Image (cartoon, rainbow, N blue to C red):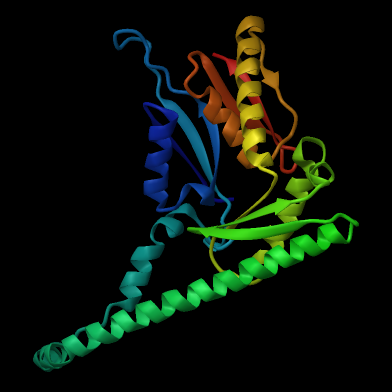
Amino acid sequence: MLKSRYEGQSVEQALQQGLEDLNVQEQQVRIDVIKEGKKGIFGFMKQDAHIELTIIDPELKQFESIEALKCRHQQHEEADEPISDETHHEEAIIIEEKNNNQNDIQSEEDIREHNNQKKDSLNEVAQDTLTYVLNIIREMNIDVDGSYEIKSNTIYINMTSNNAAYIIGKRGQILNALQTVGQNYMHQFVKGYYALILDIESYREKRKETLEQLAINMAKKATQTKKPVKLEPMPNFERKIMHQAVSKIENIETYSEGREPHRYLVIKNK
């Protein structure tokens, strides 16, 4: 498993350091907080934050080691560099100067064409994924409609239904399962890291508020009892919401235990 540990004055600083070191985006890694940073008093008893980043992007997981992952862009650049021959150096310069303007025009046209093809292709994938998910729900004899929106590398599917509660399930379990199924379907047609977020009747935002309040209440409980508080298993993106909610509370640390899909968050008093 590709993983690496980082430290900084805060969890956020350690995270940014890790993302820059691995040259990845936040959604391409799982973030586990090993130790929260502690500011201390007048510089004394200061403690750095420690985190562990684990690669979850299917394409990046193909690298054999963290070092190979870090050097991937450098390797590509070296592979693309032409091997210079001193005997033909002057001739190469003349040819390059002669075709420079033409190559610039062609490059710009190629980039625009590639971006348009990528946009059209991703829209097709998003539409197919939307249809696939809606058909699954309709097979459950539930009327549902939906639309999609693409932002960066994420496809957002928003649905409406008079029976939203049946689609959401207890604590969002059915909605999360549908999201996993939809994402697996989507990954058959796109390369690289693309995420799918499935929502209905603004449930995700309401759930986020519930998780944030729960995290704060459990942090208070951990402070009062001086004992770790273990929460029920939940997806990585929900654990991340809770971690962020308590990250600024002093003398509280959070970390995850267990294996997916039974991985859960622990809130502990330092």
